[in-house]
Image 1 (tube, helix red, strand yellow):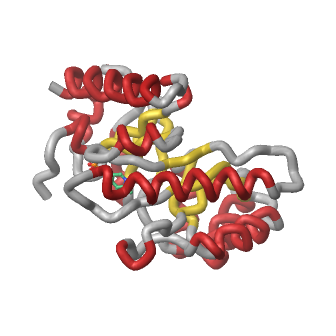
Image 2: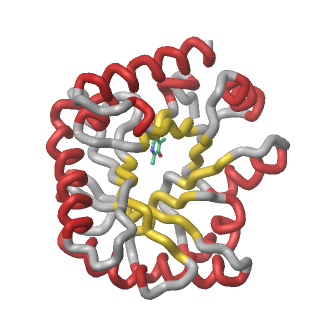
Length: 228
Ligand SMILES: *Cc1c(COP(=O)(O)O)cnc(C)c1O
C-alpha cells in the first residue's frame, strides 16, 4: 500500500509540475514520518523514498538509531532553541527557522561540531490565519542577520498555510511565498540564489507545485491517516 501511495504521489507531483510548465525533477518529496513506526518507514525506504521529515527532535532521534541505513533527515516542525544541539547532529535541513534567537542557537551548536547547517526561514504568509513563522516584512532582516552567522546557511523558505478544505483557498499564500523569495533574490548582493520553497502537504501539494514549490512535505498521502 505504501508503495502504491508513493507511485501515486510521484505521478501527481509530475503532473502538477508539467501543468505549470515546470520540470518534475525540480520538486523534491520529503516523506513526513511523524507517528509512523519504523517498519512502515522501512517500507517507504524500499519504495524509493530518500528524504524523511520529522517534526520533533526526540522522535527523530529514536528513529535514527533504529534505521541503520544512510537516510537524509529534515526537521519540518517547530524547533525550540534548547533542542538545537541534537537537531544539528541529525538534520540535513531545518525548515523552521523563524527568529534570530533560534538561528543563533543553531549557529552556535553547528559550530561546536564543525558543521554549516542548512536552514529555511519559515514565513507566515497567511496573516492571522496561521500562527507559525516570521512576518513577511521581517524576513529580509532575518535573512541578513543569518548571513552574519558562519555556521548557518539559508537556502530558501518554508510556509504552513492554514488547514482548509479547498486547497485553492491557500493558492495565494503559496504565491506570496514565491514572490517573497523572488524579490529577496533580486535584492541580494551575494550571488548564491535562494532556491528552495518548502510548501505543500498531502491535501494541497499540487496547488503548491503549480505556484512554484521545490519541496513538498507528504505524510498521510504516503503513510495513510495518522491515528494518534
Ligand atoms: C505533519 C506535517 C506535514 C505532513 O502533513 P500531511 O498532511 O500528513 O501530509 C508537513 N509539514 C509539517 C510541518 C508537518 O508537521
